[in-house]
Structures are given as C-alpha cells and as structure tokens.
Amino acid sequence: MHRSEITIDLGALRRNVRTLVRELDGAELWAVVKANAYGHGGVDVAGAALGSGATALCVATVQEGLALRREYAQARILVMGPAASSRDIAHAREADLELAVEDAEIPDGVRVHLKLETGMGRYGLERLPEPTENVVGLMTHLATADTDPDFARAQLERFNAATAGHTQLTRHAANSAAALRIPESRLDAARCGIAIYGLSPFGGDPADDGLEPVLSWQSYLAHVKQLQPGESTGYGRRSVADEPTWIGIVPVGYADGFRRDLSGTEVRVGGELRPAVGTVSMDSFAVRLDRELPVGTPVVLLGHGVLAESHARVADTINYELVCGIDSDPRRARRTVIDG
Image (tube, rainbow, N blue to C red; front, side):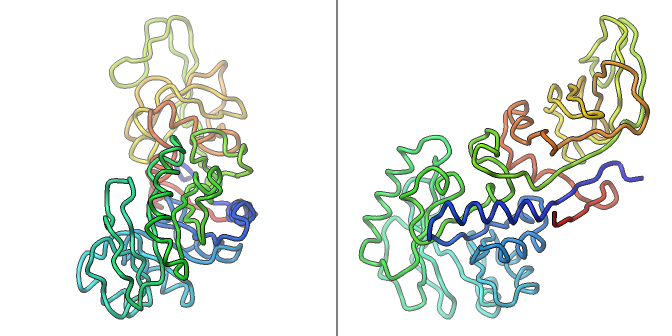
C-alpha cells in the first residue's frame, strides 16, 4: 500500500484552460509548464493544455523545452529563462525552441523574444534594441499583478511606450493574475501558469475565478491512539493533551512535501476537517480527532475542499511553493492521472 496517492485531473485542467481562453477574449493563451508543470507532470499537462486552446508552451530552461519537444514535435515552445551557454542556444536552434533574450546579444538562427525590464528588477533589457529579423516577440514580466495592480499598470505603460513602433511582433506581458484582473495587459498573448492548475494567483478560493484545482493528494490513518492528560505527540512536545484526546498518525511528512510549518492546518479525515497537531516529522504527522476512528480512514491532504491556498496561509507562503514541493517519487507515493 502506498503511503499517499497524488491524482492529477486533466479534465479539470482542460476546463481551466477553456475558462482562461474565454477570459482572454481573443488574446492567445500560452501555458506555463515549467518545473514539471508546477509539480503536476509536464508532458501530461502540456498535451491537455494544447488540446484545450493553449497555443504555446512556456518553460524555464532549454532542457525542459527539449523534453517537451520529444513529445510534441509541432508545439510552439518558449524558453523564458536565460540560455546558459552556446551549447544551450545550439540545442534550442536544432529543436526549434524560442528563446527569451535579456541582453543586447541576439543569437542567430533561433526565434527570439526580447525581454524588457519594466519593474521586476531581474532579467531584462533597459532599452529596446532594433529587432533583428529573427525577433518574433517582445515581452516583460509583471511584478505585482496579484497584489498591486497600479504598479503593474505602470509597468504596462512603460512596456507599451517602448514597443509602440513594433506592433507587428507578438507582445506579451500578462501572467495569470493580470489575465484575470487587468484586461489591458492581455495584449497579443498571456503567459498563464498557476491558474491553469486551478490555483488562485490571489491566494483566495480558486472558484471565485471559475477555476478547479487539478491536483488532489490523499493518505490515510496509519495509527490511532488516545493521549491521556499530560501526554504529547511528536518532536518537541508541541502538542500536549489537557484531556483524553484521540489522535491519528498520517504516514506523510515534510519529505513528501507536507511541510513542517503546516502544523495547525486542516485536512479532511473521513470527510471531516481536522487540525494537524504537534510537529510535522519527515515521514508522518498527527491529526486531532473528535473520536476513535479505524486505521485506514482516508485523509485528504489537498483537494475535495482542502485548498492549497488555505495551507499556504498557515505556512506563510504561496500555493505555488506548496504544489511544487510535493514529492511524487513512486517509492513514496502513487501518482494517478485521470481525464475526468
């Protein structure tokens, strides 16, 4: 028996993509599938996204792009991170990948998107050089579309002013948050990542934007016991019973991606929300029960109303980090892909 099971619902992902395509109202949707599609499985997600209306794939590295090219010979693939070497550029050229370029040296023989620095403070050109014939796109990266739309609009103003004379090229700036909340950012294409996975770029309920979480994660109660007053569970005695208290032990911990700072979050045990208590260990954590439950009772860690956004608030992080950190190593978890 596996310690946990991760389920990827490609049907939900397809519906999210179609929702975003409608929202973009004519702008193209480019699906961001870097980091193994935010832990959801790059190859499976890429195919579902392309089949549901996405017109391009975006990755972080040439190596990610090459892995997808082996599966999708005709797909448009943009590498958004820097090509680290001339060898990377050569591989991109051979595989017909497109490259984002953040400096004045524009490589030959490969399609290029010039990236302008407008306020993210990372990669990007301070001034737009005259595009060469292999430049096909102009792009920028919005820093605060999810938290400060006024600053994002100021970035857009800078970008629009710099690119006004090059409207024949594909211009793209919007991420998921901007695509959903800042219509003027959509331009020719929007690079959407977190939203296609049914996760909120705003840290709220994804359903507020018509999105469905794609990933669910389930385990079970491996052990159930009653603590007597003064007894504790876990390292550091962080949870000490002040009355007879039933607890269940779930065989998942921070080595699996259920982070140590998720103590206090809620999971669904046998259909009821129950709090994680004590210190999350490498391979297990405890939940407080309201009664004795049988060993084997299902425990939902994510999905079915247990939101990554809720866990993220407890851990003082973002939903992106949580889903990227889930370990789908088959020696620890079973991974199932459905197309519901």
